[in-house]
Image 1 (spheres, helix red, strand yellow):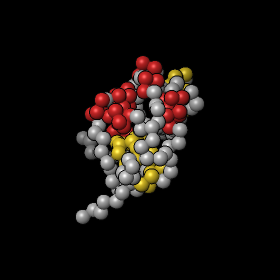
Image 2 (cartoon, rainbow, N blue to C red):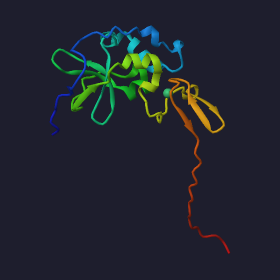
Image 3 (cartoon, rainbow, N blue to C red):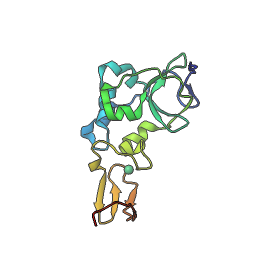
Length: 168
Ligand SMILES: [Zn+2]
């Protein structure tokens, strides 16, 4: 039997504090850098209470969760990667056993400025509508969402040797 251990907050906001996030600023019409699914998740009437308090937390293995801690110290929310993929279909739960979670400071400020790059600073994840992310010229591309990252195309030769019987 797995022991249920409480998910704990190691830093950040007081329980139940409001974020006063203006959801309309993150509507997909405001820019392709904003996730349509994250918007729909927070805008869904079922998630009204969550939207007013939603903060972003990171576990020890850097998995992001969106939600809040209630006044008993329980975390209420959902995994960010699921929200980005499935939007309003994602159920909000009280996940246990996540261990220590630290708040991603100023997440909404970073999201307003950089869109989904605030969730993928390494620029190595695939997102829906990712074709709007990069402006490519030759072997260079620049991120159009945060306008802070450029990448160059590196050619790598993978030599594969296989043996096969053929008719002689
Ligand atoms: Zn970027």
